[in-house]
Amino acid sequence: MGLAATLAVAMLAGLMILLVHHRRATAPSQVPSGGPDSADVAAVLAVLHRHASALLDRNSPIWAADLDQSAAAAGYAGRQRQVFANLAQVPLEVWRYVLIAPVTDSHVLAPAAARLGGQVVIVHVELQYALSKVDPAPTGKQLWLTGVRRGTDWKIAADDDAAAVGGPSWRGPWDFGQLLVRRGPHTLVLAHPAHRQDELVFAGLVETSVPVVTRVWGRNWNDQVAVLIPDTAQEFAAVTGDNADSHDLAAVAVADQVSADGTVLGARIVLNPANLARLDAAGRRLVVGHELSHIASRAVTSDQMPTWLIEGMADYVGNLDSGLPVADTAAELAAEVRAGKVPSALPSGADFTGGARLPQAYEKSWLACRLIADRVGPSGLVRFYRVVAQAAGADPATAVAIGLRQVLHTDVAAFTAAWRSYLIGQLR
Picture 1 (cartoon, rainbow, N blue to C red):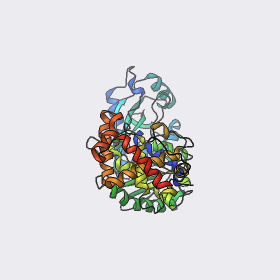
Picture 2: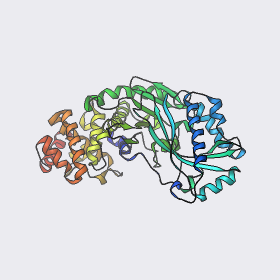
Picture 3: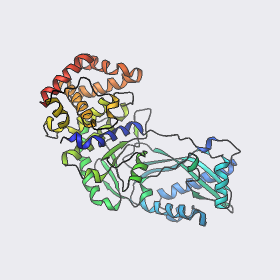
């Protein structure tokens, strides 16, 4: 069985790097019905500013003092005290709350006030945080936080009062338990105690993969990589921003956005150690190299590009230096080619939506990119990727043709014919 058969579902997760964008969720704050007094909103924001400073200063008493101590808020307060403890080893450069809008929907405010037994202000905020030496700038996550007046003071009492009407607060890895931190020359790995040994193994795997990615993509990417190792499927979904079944996923690369200057913000590799453990060394290296390549290429990648190029490029990087014969790596496609079933066209986007033939889609894509690199070198493959990415922004239908003409001095028909011949030569 080839690597693609084992890893196709895991590789499909690589598309997440395209899909997890910075979100402005539809929130109840957009429903005007007589909002809170501006002075009260300012008072709650002042508490949140103090709260953020307490975390950065590691001041547990102030952090705890900002939390409402009523019975109705006891669950939230207990979780937040645990969050403070869970973040003890995590190197934070930035942690702040920035107002997006106060919630003005009475259908949200009235139940919260009744439950807490006091005047409330609910603010839709962006938690902006940055991990030291990893994040070039803060990344933003959406929260809906409830402030309640207690006497002359305001306290933080909840983060889920708006959830039922469209304002679910983001959960970070620190919301799911104690975090252990391992720092390497290119990595910051965050894992829970159950994965103490995995943290060491996968930190080393990422460290050895970073130079391979840099060899192809050059140094113009942030090679300081944050790696998350969740404990549960619920945590995996929370930190990736996706609720799809993660049972078969080995890893996924995510990012929040690309800034105007091309800086990728919030880039993370999220690993599923149980599934990675089922792979051999070559398989694990392919997964990690594949996802790292998605991070390195994120600034120039768009979802208007053909999927075969995005995924084939990532597989090209992931397979470098594997030492495995091509026919072994692409065993499923090789079996078909040997039986005389040579594909007539490059994979379409529909070929990557799952199913029994997903391995062949990845193998075809990998070998298309490998052919390009054989002809014009790895740097030429990167140039082709960039040309297609730029052209796809104007017209996705002609982007590949433009890239082939500019970089390989050929057209789609001639390249497809050459690719079919390449498959026969490599796989028979």
